[in-house]
Image (cartoon, rainbow, N blue to C red; front, side):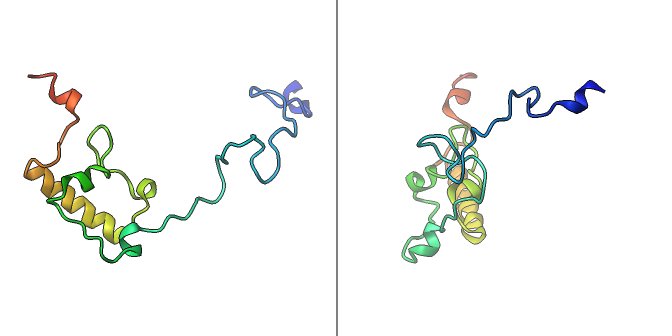
Length: 111
């Protein structure tokens, strides 16, 4: 029954002081960790002249991780419609060997 009367000591994470700050997160110059996400605008919706083309490998490479996976919508800020188009274009470019299926350091292991 001793654990119920902790008071302001905190717990396993240390004392709970008012060191977290106010609206800015409390850390000098650093961004907030939680809170409402920053709203990104889809670059393909904003600029109607941009086209998703499977033949443009350099443009599509921006939407792949270093492991060769397709980046999620929440990271790159595309809308659902353009994310689907990007996924199809990336898969077509992989079929034509314009983009890799696997990262380079994994491909070189079996050679």
